Image (cartoon, rainbow, N blue to C red):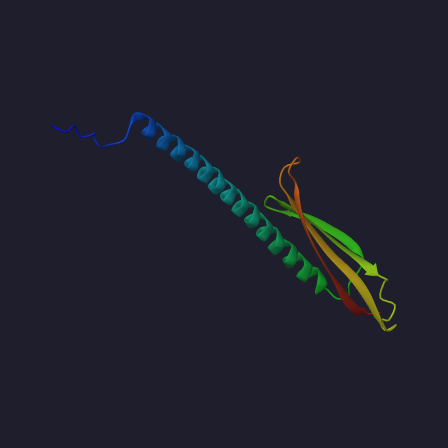
Length: 126
């Protein structure tokens, strides 16, 4: 009578399979957590961009433009607006004046503060 070897996995094979599964799940968990963190940061930048663009459009549409600064808060976001003359355009006809309009939005805690800045040049009659 021939003895048949029993089919199945040994305890060592099962332990190795669980170790591989555990490491794989740990890597997937870390990657998923990083993706969520990146999604949150992207959302913060999107909100900052919307705030900056709205203040930039509001300031750039004011006529006549005047040099100065303004600031305020929108929820957790702080914004600063600056309007100043721009003198680097030498070929500009003397009937126009160029203005630099810049908005900076900042948010976050002191140790991890983030900024978003947007600017444009606007022309006005002298």
